[in-house]
Image (cartoon, rainbow, N blue to C red):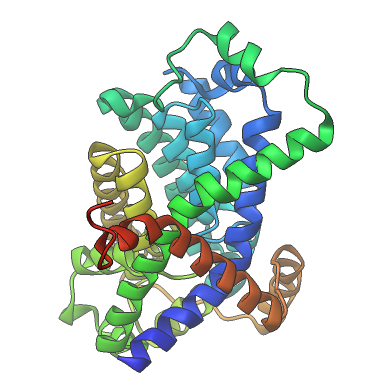
Length: 357
């Protein structure tokens, strides 16, 4: 049990700084981007909105967990479900650091397939999200006339008051709600990794005859892996003999889906949204892996160029925030505190003497 908790804490340390920064950005975005402007850009079923959301996600070097509050912040600020899911797909897969590391460690062939698949997945998931969404097409209250929303948002507030209001919304509302799902989700991932450690995964990923692409897609979809940290691990597997298609499938699902993200989408947007997101991402990742094997096998030669790899790693490191360990622990405590704040009312009702209040 202790090992499971320590694994979960280690995962939280890797994501907590990104989460705190994302809560801040989501809150400021919620209060500084006018609802009518965001609704004009992303609050519709137009394909152009999905393209804009995808391109926005591509420029942010945000980790897999950090994209959760930003995506949900977009949704609760007026974006439709399709652009929201497109943004949450593109950010961890197509951000500059991930693409550079994929090119440096896995070579131009896999990197090109990864980029094309990530771009296609972001666009198609946005189209399907808008097409199949029901009541979760937009956040509650976003169907109000833009003029009323604008009147409320553009009251007589100073810059400092807007910043304060944004941070309160980002942490107290969005942050608390997301943190409880992140903490619970990372605890589940800690259990999975304790029962099925990386050595086990490496063994069977390196022997594609023992596990199918479907299994790899499902595994990557529920595990939590850093948006860039798992790329060297996959490169080692490919160099050891794993099929290139397995690498593509795991890169896709591992970066774009994880238990904390799925729990957050399920509870804060809806069941249909998480079914769309999970099934489309898993299906596209599986097909991409299958087609990659058809294209590259059996003559595939693992990419290894020390000079090229080192050069791209140096560039990618400039785009990746590496927080000092004390800051990671401080941010982790903040996330756990926010999670406790969110669940405290439920705990309090279960305490002796409180049930009748």
